[in-house]
Length: 403
Image (cartoon, rainbow, N blue to C red; front, side, top):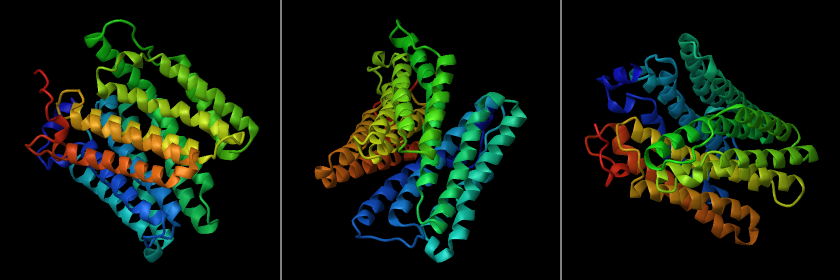
């Protein structure tokens, strides 16, 4: 019923569903942030931020870009969870403006003041948590309350990031908190949607072995992941953390093997979810190697952020955008190009850490791949998300779904 009422929305189509503006602007912000970050990294560009260049880059990826994607997903999923009306129109536009003003305030925080930037930036996630809690409580959907709890921890991490930067000049702890929340969200949400979407497709197009649905094993893996990540937050170089990271990496590989991803190669819109999830155990294993001095710690961080977060956000944004606008759930050539670009970006970013002698070249490859992927998403899906009568490149060459 919530979906039907949403289709009857008479306002600007961009504000009809939360995924429309947040996916589109998050993709644009992700591309532009990296486009600015590369010359900032080489000292060729500066912004008027109270954050050091590295901290600005981390913050805008971890606490700027990703919260927008999470919000677009969350407020699209909640009406399905609760049966209540979606947030749309003026309230959605106001929430979007808070996010946009937060991006400006953080970038201009040297001029507007760190405290003002903190308040404006934190207000966005605070409003998201409050609205999500209201909807879940009103709908009695307690099963999905842990997702909102993780977003609340992300809010705490964002506040801590501002405070750490101002008083300590370093953001290591709050960075680890934010990354940990993102990985747990991928493990929790991905663990539900990947086997579910895979099962639905296999039943129709490739009958045979099916993925194991979410169960006790998955809950145990997520619990072990939380334990390992807490250990990483508190003691990132401790041997116990390294052992936990290695064990949890193995558990995630076993979990992924249970989802029958090897049977989905005919549909790129589906297989990319499995490929994106591979970076979760990959990151855990790289962190374990870092603890024992084999690799730098940033290898695991980039596997998680460029790999797991980058690939999974694009995979979910593309699928949700197609599905919720009534398009066929299959990957057009444009979508497949976007997926190829983000995989190249993720692998190159990790390789830049592992192979420092080729670091500059690999860093530029990674940046170009990231920009192509997210700007490509904005171009391909922009007309579709904005409600234009002209279909976006994302659906070109894809047959319309049967009615």
